[in-house]
Image (cartoon, rainbow, N blue to C red; front, side, top):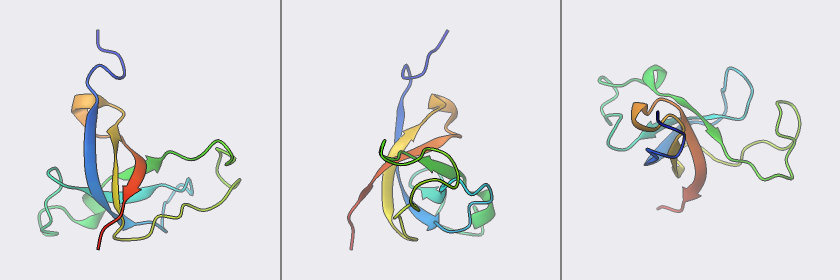
Length: 99
């Protein structure tokens, strides 16, 4: 039996939408390098996953409490997949400065 952490898979990606989370949870839609093609005819914005974001413990931790996520569209982010090899549940841990 596999447990969380047995097959941690890291990613680097780019924020595509930081404002329209349909659940209002502060998630961001991301295009993950090496997984989602840059060609939008092969993977449109609608095909991309919403990723939860690690927040500091000083935030409320529930929708409607705390501040908005500071990530903007085109921000470069890194994180892990919570479901390991399946790679369908991304969690953003931080951002990486870029030009």
